[in-house]
Amino acid sequence: MSNSHNPVMNRMLPATIEKAQAEYDAQFDSIVSSQKMTIGGTAIKIAGLFTLLLAGAFVAWNVPAVQGLMLPSVFVAFGLAMWITFSKKVRPGAVIAYAVIEGIFIGAISFFFERAYPGIVMNAVIGTLTTAGAMFTAYSMGWVKVNARFTRVMTFALIGYAGFAVVNLLVGMFTNSAGVYSSQFAWLAGLVGVGLAAFTLNLDFEDISQGAAQGLPREYEWKAAFGLLVTMVWLYLEILRLLSIFNRD
Image (cartoon, rainbow, N blue to C red; front, side, top):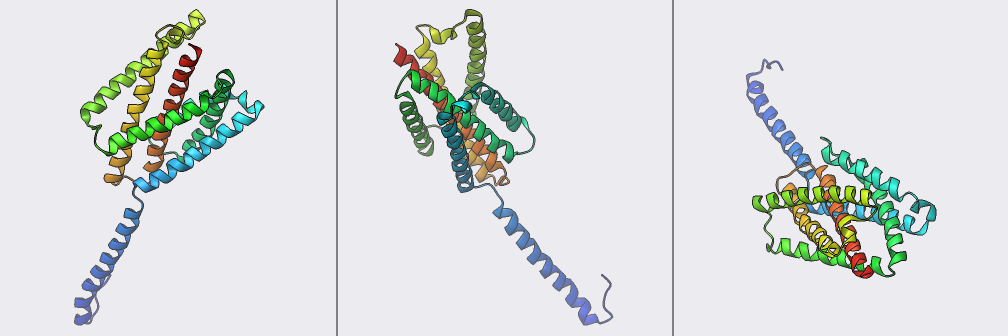
């Protein structure tokens, strides 16, 4: 901008421009700060995803044709989970699709377990909610410290459990059985799975807390909500399996 020929205006212009820029910066900072990740915003997304999960489960539970999609849904849900986890971008659409498709799988498998062991699904739901509540209480009260050591131990434990699951699956395929879950140690393996899933919830709580504290972009609320949803589904399935082991014995 060229200077005015009026010396008074020349002195006024820089101050006016500086004031306008300061107001613009303040407005921009206000907009940016309002778009940061918050615990409340993440909680809303968690509630929404669980609603979609339950809707998918309700349909699968009540519609026999949808129950036939149990195996395809688990593979599609797994593919979406891998895409969401390893994608450099946050993908809300994929997270929403995962919740619905995973709900179909949950509803279908729950229906078959309920038919084999009447009353097991309600007990598994109560057990899942009770365990999650206990873990949240332990985390919020500081009884479980999610520090570097805890994270490292959990990481190795989860890798080890994933390796065990793969080996057990292969053994089951070759022996036409459920592997260790067909043995007398089935309850022990099931209990370990429940314990790992339960303590993994603390990692999810910490991700949400730290994400909000660090002021990550609001879009990361989707990824944090997705992580908690995955762990809750895993916990439910582990409890469902453990209860079925006790029921068959």
